[in-house]
Image (cartoon, rainbow, N blue to C red; front, side, top):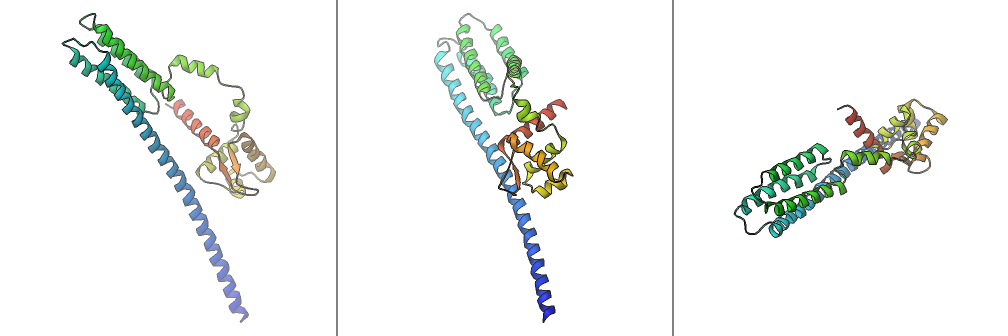
Length: 249
């Protein structure tokens, strides 16, 4: 009888262990699926937002050219078609994550070339309208933060605050802290899991975790709970990835 109770107890322990492993697998799956879902939703939102803006810009092109081009001109329809194509191509740049300065400069040079071959003085009115619409598009790209000229980039560099050192650079100036941030960007981690990952124990690991907690890049769900990345931490990590890509191109 005692042997049967012992066997039953062992089976219960084994089942409990299996359930715990299943729970962990489900938890990891939900966290990864949730992150992928969020990224998918954000991507769709960006695309929908860009499409809505482009539709508005295309309407602006049509209204602007129709209302402000010279009315009595035998070249009006041909020029309007060329101007519309030029401005539509430029508007489609809004779909990109970043618009290089050389692309905008080439567009401006193309427009200047079209203007230099204009057959009469009255063409000035039409080209002024196209230049204005083109300028509005470039301004829109700036406001969406997908385009900045080199001069604007220099101004951005000058505006980098020294507070970036204690808030971002110093917390990540350590191999183990970067390991921790990368790991919990994929899924939440326990103290034990982070200890195994970094090779740090006890107070040493707590020291590095506290650095990341103080910086606002990670948080702990509750006392003795899992560690997870914050929005700030994810943005910093993405920025580091972008910087690495730029340096290696």
